[in-house]
Length: 139
Ligand SMILES: CC(C)(COP(=O)(O)OP(=O)(O)OC[C@H]1O[C@@H](n2cnc3c(N)ncnc32)[C@H](O)[C@@H]1OP(=O)(O)O)[C@@H](O)C(=O)NCCC(=O)NCCS
Image 1 (cartoon, rainbow, N blue to C red):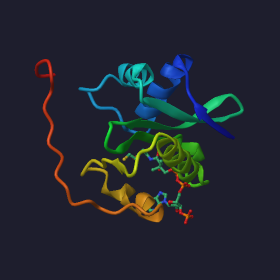
Image 2: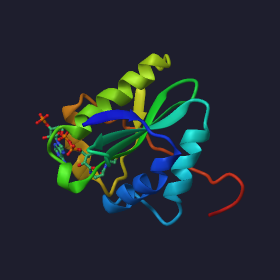
Image 3: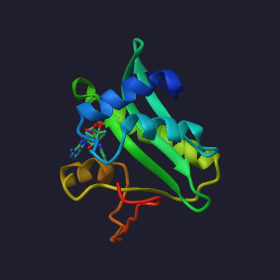
Image 4: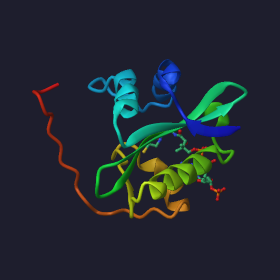
């Protein structure tokens, strides 16, 4: 398995993976999310590739203050083998290389079962409420 920064040819595979592991929501177009991350000057999507197949992702970006990770996903048949840990290690490395002093991520309150994964990797609950607003009109 190798981990590398993905190019646009992986858009469909990434969107499919995110759908398979339940990370997509009706108000987010996963393909557009992938392409936006590649378009941005300080963001990208890391992919774990095994024998030519995309088996995991972590979207990374820096906003000028913090580093962020989104769309952390491992294909169900590859879960529990350290792929997620390796993706997060590489995501953190990507952010450190871009001078981010801290990494943050959001976990949906419907996905609390996954908290154990992040705790294993040294992440703490920041006890912060995230507020949101659509820019350019409601979706
Ligand atoms: C979360 C996810 C990426 C983890 O990937 P993975 O490859 O299965 O994780 P790893 O095998 O690298 O596990 C790393 C460590 O976390 C632990 N872990 C993994 N999932 C866990 C869970 N749900 N609860 C508690 N611990 C967990 C593992 O036991 C392992 O510990 P160890 O290294 O001490 O043995 C994967 O389960 C997934 O894609 N889930 C669906 C999508 C999702 O919810 N993503 C998170 C969005 S915020």
